[in-house]
Length: 150
Image (cartoon, rainbow, N blue to C red; front, side, top):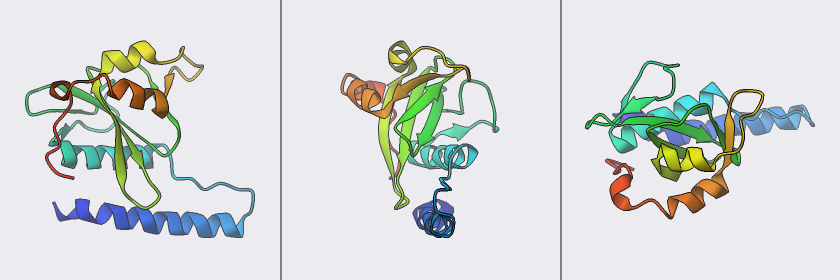
């Protein structure tokens, strides 16, 4: 899958465009977010962890492992993510401006769900990346999805 190797460079180019827009229009933010970041995270996760992606907008889970474990994938450039329901397995990636991605959490959805905040008006329960990093220390290797590629 040669396309996956292009993602870091494409993201770097995207941020060059964002920087130009922000320079042209001071005080306005042009941060890529929402569906764009989510979709980028999903394709990176599918490649990196050997996941089969579900069609877009499937409720609760985004993919499954070869063994059939259901996985919710969250990707962000911010400091937290929101959960609408308790996933079987949760994978959280932070997308960096240089195009790279970093695994923040890779473990049971229940652990993250139990530690998420109260439901907000948008229906999501927020959880910070800092909290997820702390929780990750409690996840044994056998409860993590193994990386197929980096």
